[in-house]
Length: 517
Image (tube, rainbow, N blue to C red; front, side, top):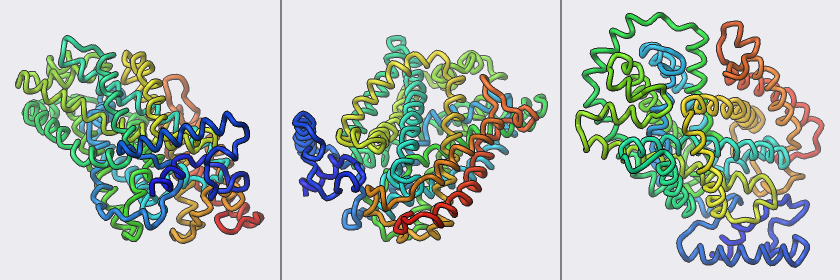
């Protein structure tokens, strides 16, 4: 059993037209003695890691025999914990802070955006138990072996962006409750905890995510308990005195909130690859949707409520400041309960490690999917590399948090929505919503996968519609400038799907690849 796991771990990810998947990856297929020695060194390291209980599985799909975990409720807890935290609250706060919306307008926008956009990542979760594939490996069944490299590369950069944002949130909140800590120290603490969790792997992450939502729930209840009366008193007054927002601002806030939901789809399948494959699709989807939607909506609404009321309450307004330090804002709200409030804020800050840990884990498997060279390095080594990248960038970015937050969310959302539309179009239209139509054994055989030309063309061409629909501080497209606001996510989703239907039909007709292509 251990040998099998180690073979999977060191699977170089080469298409079998170059290196057979069944080969014993001892380095002999990679040429010189130096490369064989390095690969052998990784195997030795993985043997030690396995004894310490660290997951050593790489990007190879799990077999049906390995997918036996019946705890489908973990599809709820892993996402509920990852999303129900201060980052979600920060997303909701963008409505009043960045888009100048009142609370009523925020509610209307969030109801529509969260209900619709949470559907996409919830369905992507289903691919994990059903196919046993990592999300980026599953992408090969629409983008082809080489086309999926582009998607994996974009995903790696997106995960770095998310890690930076989450670590800034957690770091600032930790710094806000102690004079002995600054943002830099707080960020380092958050990232190092996330590193340990992601380094250990799949089982450790699921165990952690099973419980880490509890402090978030306690914190949110405390916030409502302490500040609830002021919310009830001030929000109606502010709503009546605030002019109605322009339609473009409503749409822009909706797409920003939607982007925070949609972007989970690029690694949603990674946390179900050992769960029972015979579980009905509706049950997997329901658990996942419940976890994603309830956590996203609760966090967004609470963040929007407190940010809306802040201008009417001097201590809150002072804590919020220019919106670049969310930690001070939370401390100001909970100030009436003294040190206990600070304790709750610390717990809340530490829950940010929930999304950071799974994002760091998926960073590793996404990077392994880019190139055979990257796939030779064990997943857990990439957790260390990711840590070294995120800490310095997050420290620099902490001084412009909300501006960076809004930019990162939308930039990630633009490509993720086109990617999601193409994968879903392939699944529902060309594979008839039938998981048996995926020949998973060909995941590493480039000649048996789709060419990927249709997916890449649809993906790239969709940006001809996305770019004119963008509304960013550094660029406003002509469509957005006409008053629509930033509708890049919406136009990108439909443009990529429609283009893919046409291009893929042509590709299937003229391609000799019949098994998966």
